[in-house]
Length: 140
Picture 1 (cartoon, rainbow, N blue to C red):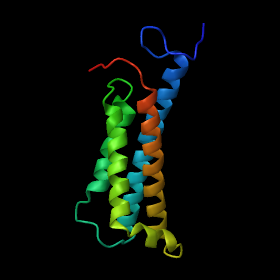
Picture 2: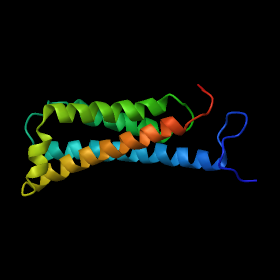
Picture 3: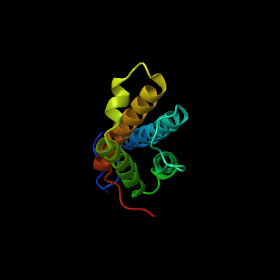
Picture 4: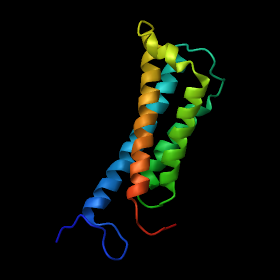
């Protein structure tokens, strides 16, 4: 019997489990896309990045954790929310993204910024959906 309601034991039904896995995977993929966007900005010569920029490292590690461990360890889903929120707030506070998004003629920085911001926004939304829909017991 297929059900879309959580099971009485507090575990997820097949439909919820499938949706949760999809949200975790989408989150991880878009975290990696956002990391690639930052690397593209660095390669295309956007000034102001440090010698070892933390953004792509944070996003890549978070993406790998989401893709490999989020279906087994519940608290990893928090990484899929905190990492993109951190990068999104940092990008908005720093403020230079608006100039890069407004200058389509400089295609490398424009594309890198669009990938970064699009990736972190989609990852953040998917992470929030995964966290709110996850009603499974905590397993370590």
